[in-house]
Length: 219
Image (cartoon, rainbow, N blue to C red; front, side, top):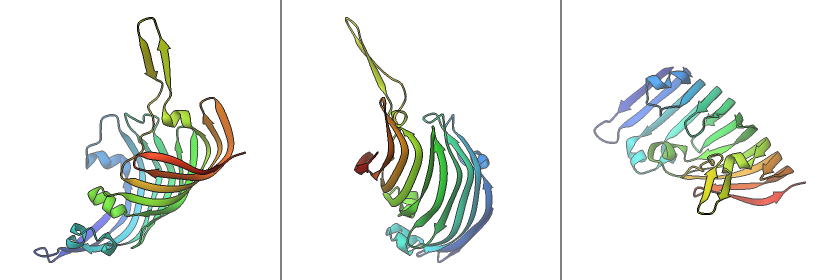
């Protein structure tokens, strides 16, 4: 990766400009940062990005004044961790950076048994990355099949004369905090409990660590 940055006025507002261009093997990330035990990461990141801004605007949360442009591509990404041992794989994902937002041009991914495609736009990604501020976006998402039992976790309860035991068959999918996404979603086949639904369409609102379904339609 060819990375360069120019710093000016360090005693006042600290102006910066630079670029990142090239490819990076994500399997080498452990050489530069600490990964949690059990974490696996692989894939290739290709970038051609330019940026300009200053620290004063970052301190004031004026992220719209931080200028980003260029493209970023991910290919053959695999991420697995102790909490998600089955892993998430992304065969391709392409992003375009511009001053207003980050555009997700296309994404093809697999999680558990679901093949997922998506596109859309992401706002305030800089604030989220730098100061853990809320990130928002609108996405169009399609999955060939979705088993909500795998995402939500299932429980079973056994009664005895003296005790009641509840066991979890699988850990639920944790909804990230500080995200507010609106998804126009379509699922060819959805399973929940012991029922299967076909050709679902609707809006999914993800906010405040909760997921809400709106305008749901199905065959």
